[in-house]
Length: 176
Image (cartoon, rainbow, N blue to C red; front, side, top):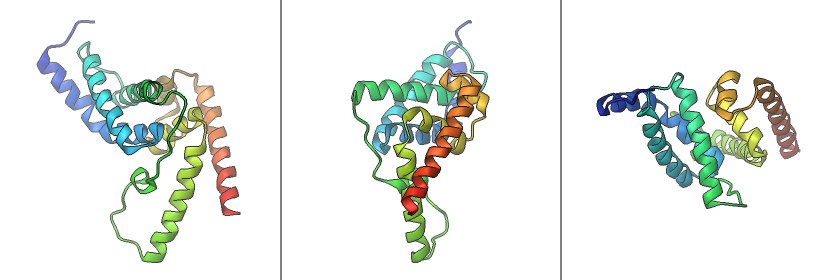
């Protein structure tokens, strides 16, 4: 494949990378367990995506970006946390902010619910967590997840079903 000019690369970057930075950051947060680590990963994703786009455009920009994010996050984790995983201590940052201010009681219940869901999701083994995040948070299709993770669609489906079952068991245990 022929290399693109600088102008074409910058245009491809604006079209391919910038619209999906929110998705990249979200996936990176869930994979690294830390907002600051996710920012480091996101920065590296941008550098890697730019280099890849010099060779030409991506067919599916969103799947391309999440694949780069996944690979970059795993490389970053191997380099920076060889045997440990740090869990996020900021469920609000991972869940996102709401536009309307809820009542204090509703806010307390929502925070407790979000905290339970976040804890259950964080406790999932990484292969299940990444597929669940890609499907439920990033809203990728099974095919896009299969392409991003390099596993067959059947494996994606079974991991997703298993992840959902593990989440239910964990949440039922939390609710007593």
